[in-house]
Length: 71
Image (cartoon, rainbow, N blue to C red; front, side, top):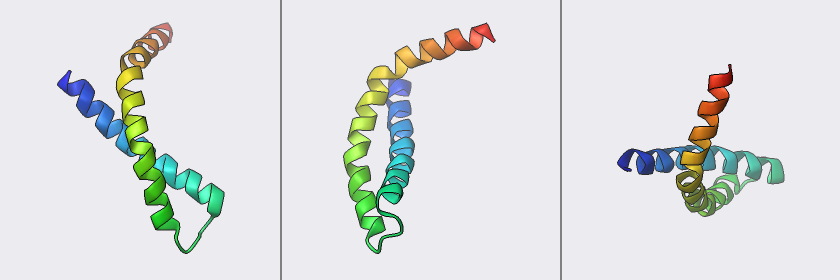
């Protein structure tokens, strides 16, 4: 369980940080307030990503194992 929680925190941190930067940039470009807008988007995205990663992690792990076994 400890591993699952740590994994969800790290994975959600990384993905939400990168994805929020990308989506913010796509939506507004190199805006003067880019960093603050990005951080606002990231602060909203990280908790949601954490919950999603924690809940869906075991299912996705099983699906990935099944796919890997076929190749």
